[in-house]
Amino acid sequence: MNILLIMVPLGVAFITLAIGIFVWAVRRGQYDDMETPALDILVDDLPAPVAPPAALDVGGTGESAGRDAD
Image 1 (cartoon, rainbow, N blue to C red):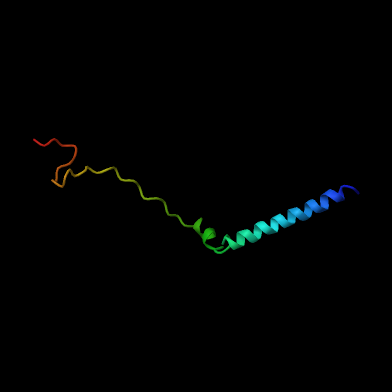
Image 2 (cartoon, rainbow, N blue to C red):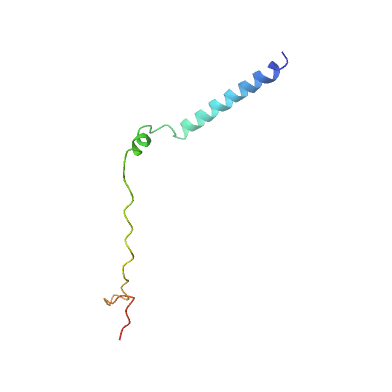
């Protein structure tokens, strides 16, 4: 019977904490958009392949950086 003196207040504190966290999440907008995250998993948008770096144009002269100017 003495355990109820510990468990009842502990249970009430836990429920109060859970309700407080839920209210905080609602006010922060965690539940504003419920459909988009569920549909994002169905979209198959792979990142574009990375192209190799092109030769750099040195000073706008039309010559690439890998060439020596003679």
